[in-house]
Amino acid sequence: MIVNCAKSCNACHLRDPKVRCNRESLGMELDPVYYPDDMNNMFESLTTRYSTKYNVSVLSTEPWVVVFENFLTDKEIDALITTQKRWERSTDTGLTNEFGETGRILSAGRTSSNSWCDKACESHPDVKKVLQKIEEVTHVKRKNYESFQVLRYDVGQHYNVHHDFGHEDIHLACGPRILTFFLYLSDVDEGGETAFPELGIAVKPIKGRAVLWPSVLNEDLNAMDKR
Image (cartoon, rainbow, N blue to C red; front, side):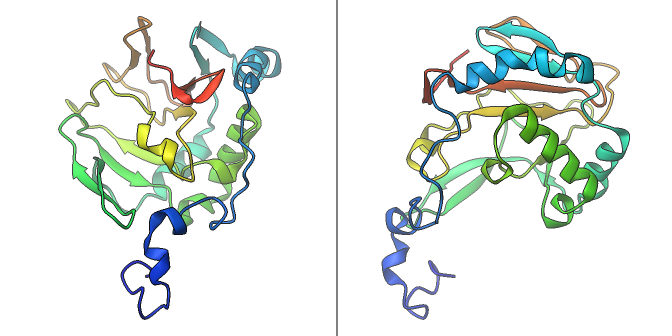
């Protein structure tokens, strides 16, 4: 509204994204979620904190790739699936215009269908339990998360090799993605692994399983870990 009706809103100065979208204007905390070494400390503590509860497997420490078995209950999985009402072909981030609005482009390397966990989803009691568990594991508060992207892959669909780190995000109020917490909502007879080609690791989809890995370096949380 401010961007498209700035004159009517008496907010022409806010069309500039550098003014409108900085952390001070948005009322965001200025302290980072992690300081250097905080991420390593979190990963190093996982087996001690959750080895019994989730049967934690550390597949790699350089960089970290950690698997949690039975992370989701059937009720939590059903809630994440049944609350999705709008499925669309997955897209990639497009160009950003002068007002800071980012477009979307149809992806050739990502052929799944996508649905965002919106208000009806995030307000569901069983989805709230999932969010709380992730917050407990990562020590990252819910307000620092993106909403869940729920993905549906039909036979033959795929997502090519990619990285979850966005270079342009360094300049945004949100900052770059530092972690990915990947949840599996169904079993798969064949294929569908989450592969890390640089590490020679592939995680098989098993209903209720989760896998956690970083996108950034422990010592520099604005630097992409290319592995």
